[in-house]
Structure formats: structure tokens, C-alpha cells
Length: 295
Image 1 (cartoon, helix red, strand yellow):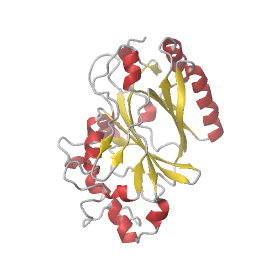
Image 2 (tube, helix red, strand yellow):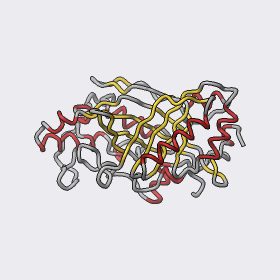
Image 3 (tube, one colour):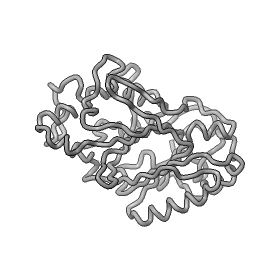
């Protein structure tokens, strides 16, 4: 499959990135704004996703797209901070990303207004700030394509993908105060060699999110990256799927809604945002917006 935004599956995660979230301000100005966006986005150095409210404003419908659900679990809360449009910029230089994000912000005005921006970066070779490797169980090659991209459907849909995004804020001081065996049990892996623990508790993150343990199997492609803002830090969780169901099944189990057992990850981290977005495929090197009745 060649007509997808290549930044979705490109590995490793970029050295530097920016997540831009926009609110809809003027429906009348949307056609010109989206035309401008198509000239700036290649799907490789900038991945774009549409929220349900923006799709509805265009009098269109994408099957499977919905707003992120505010999910309350067993002593945990997963907030919804759904926005109309999301752009994920890739790069190697923070200054260049600043210039590009300002160009996109100007191109989308006055139809869309920037309401949130998060800078992220690659830590080590793809690790969380806790030191544990992220995305170890990601599918690869053809399995990644099958997990992340829509393989059939109408024109303008094949090659599309759904993105689930949560900004998690870590309690790194509290995490580092725990003994190593306890942090390993939270994650379900040894920090020293990234090996999964056979005797990890059922609350361990790897057991709560074991993709093959769901029915149907809940495979997604994770592209998460750390973030730091002043004295706050954590992980910008990002997962792509051919639907949103796999991510939502994992989040429900993590939150204790299956069996009352909450993921150990909530002991040292909490999600502070949540959004769902549909990432259209490409056509002739540009965003294919035919499913939105554009182009």
C-alpha cells in the first residue's frame, strides 16, 4: 500500500517533533484553509488528522471516527480534550519546526486557531523518560501496515489511519524513589535488558496491554515520544490503527473496566489529554480529501 501518509509508519520516531492542535473558528473560511494546508503537508514530515467535529462541519462522515471518550475507571480518569485538527510535525531542528508550525498556523487562519502545542523528542534510541523502551511489541513491516492502515473501502479511504493521542504526565521523582523490582513490576519488564517478566503481576503494563490477549486481537502501531515543559514531563502517547477499537479496548482494560484491575502505569503517570483523529491517505503526493468531499 503506497497511498498513506508515510510519516505514520516511518521508523524510528523523529529526533524532534511538534504536535499542533487546532479549534474550528470559521466554517466559511475552511475551503481556503484546507487548500493552503494541502500545499504545506507532504504526509512525511507532517502528518495531519481530522477530528470528528471538523469532518461534520464539512458535511461528511468517516465510518469509525468519533470523539475521544472521557473514560472513568477504577480510581483513574482519562480526560477527553478533543480538537478539530491535529498536525504532527517531524524534524531534526527545533528552530525549523518552530518556523514550519508558524507557517501552518498562518495558513489555517482564520478558519482554525492553534489551541495547544507540544514539543516532543526522541530519548536515547526510543525510550520513555522512565528509561524503559517504548513500543517493544510494535508490529513491523506488513503486520504494521495491516494494523495501522485501512486496507479496503471507498476512494479516499484506503490508506487512511486513525490516531489516538494522550499526553501522559509522569511523577518521575516518585518513580525513581521506588525500588527497581517494583518499577519493573509496574512495567512488566526489566529495565536492565528490556526482557518481559514471566512472574510480573497481572497489573503490569505489558500484561494489561498484551495485544494478542484481546478478542479480537488489539494491535496498534505506537509512535510515542517524551515531552518536557518546565518541571513537568512525560510521554506523548500516539497510536495508529485501521480503527479506534483496538486502542479503546486496551484503554478500557488499563482503566480496570474489564476486571477491576488497574494498570500499574497509573501509579506513576496520569493522562491529561485525549483525542481521536482520522488521517487521510495521499493522492499524487497531497492529502486525499475526497472522503471529505474535497478534491
